[in-house]
Image 1 (cartoon, rainbow, N blue to C red):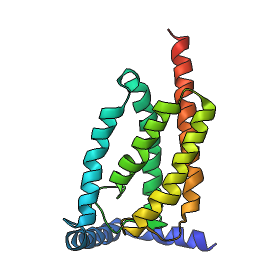
Image 2 (image 1 turned 135 degrees about the vertical axis):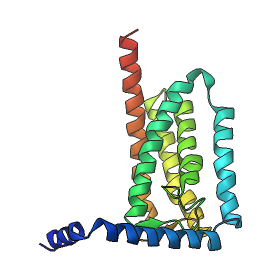
Image 3 (image 1 turned 90 degrees about the vertical axis):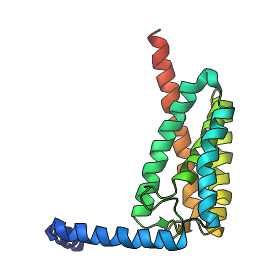
Length: 194
């Protein structure tokens, strides 16, 4: 009953009011970003991460399997970025430091440089054998959940609100498995049409 009342209240708000609230939010966010993020050491860390990720990806990717590995990364990346957007918009975590106030999700450099690119390397190296991929995928998932996320928290770049790192592990792992299965299925379909 309470949810229906809240839904009715939300739907009864005029769009002009919602636009004003959003405008106020973005003005406040922009001011916060200028005063607490822009040109700080943590901001430069995100800039460097944003630049180094694609450079290292290009340097080490197997160019003979470029489309296959990139497809895996795109499936993983789109999924991870959607989940990151949902989590940050649902206020289960937040990002005190942002590359820009206009980038959604806010920690895109982390998503790409620390999550997506390493999963692409795991796929490149271990994607041919299910057992090896599952183990490597699990090790990377554990590293991200139990080391990378806490380090980002320690640097005050990422802050958990109601989220816990333990929740991240199965999501990272399962997402890797699902993307691996999708690519394997696509490769099988492709072979049938050659």
